Length: 344
Ligand code: NAD
Ligand code: 89V
Image (cartoon, rainbow, N blue to C red; front, side, top):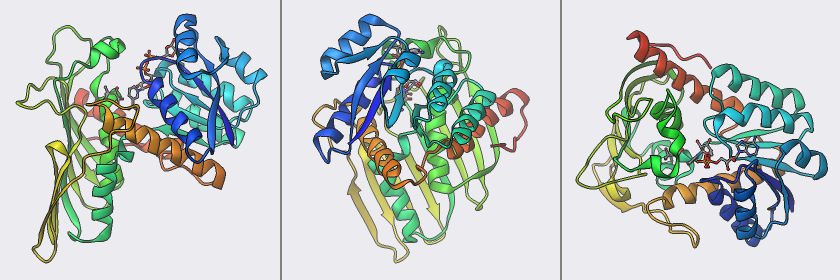
């Protein structure tokens, strides 16, 4: 059984820990043996909730004392580089939450540190692991609707994300950096790498520092044109947080993943299929987060499989730099008004 430690016991970490507990109780391939958080109160609370006795307030001390097969970093971006570099110095494989870093320089330094140490790095970029989105990708790969030429990946909501994650209201960069990174990654997952990006951003909510609306036009290298749009300022008849909607038009058919995980496919023979792709509600999950929570379990299982097999995880650091480049390109395009060629 692989022995891991989790660093950062805040808002999102309980999802990681619940998923690790499922894995330990399931096929028993991995478990969390130690926890670290600089906040003593939070550390004690989470340690008690998950029955993890070995706790540390300093990651360097934990890495020195524990014999670990991996660390799972679930702190916010400003701390990622220093924490990954500590793990890399001890050659401990790393999972690091998104966004990988606050700057492209730090993101590249993180990937380089792991490469130099010869250790795997997986960015916890979990949206592409949501089962409805995996099902969409499988349909595209099957050729049932032919060759995609247009797509839309859309996340529009008015959900109060600031209540659980107050730091989201304070950053000069907000929706593209925090949520756009997921949705842009889904666009890459479905339609391939991107050669051009044009973006417009807006701030609608008055009392936040960054942008809460983004509309991006992507030119994919395989010829697909996609629209990726995100909003936390949309007051819709039905609140869909945190659903990602997808539309694809292809040479022989089309596909729509609509509200409520409702899939409609018109295939190359003109047949129309409708399917409910609602994700399961795991025992520890709660609506409306359950689709994200399922994806946390799936990406962590993938990490364990990759680590055991010695293969590169789907959202490795190297892969994630390409998604990170789209985030940078979006901010550059919005600032200059130009179409930008993303640089990984
Ligand atoms: P949070 O602020 O609630 O928790 C972070 C925790 O890390 C805090 O308890 C803090 O004390 C601790 N910490 C900070 N620096 C540390 C250090 N150097 N050593 C040890 N502990 C340290 O943040 P959160 O909302 O849980 O978000 C954590 C990360 O998860 C962010 O990067 C966020 O973007 C990401 N996130 C991802 C998803 C997803 O679906 N993938 C969803 C929500 C949040
Ligand atoms: O998934 C995330 O990274 C979250 C949220 C869905 C709120 O944007 O921060």
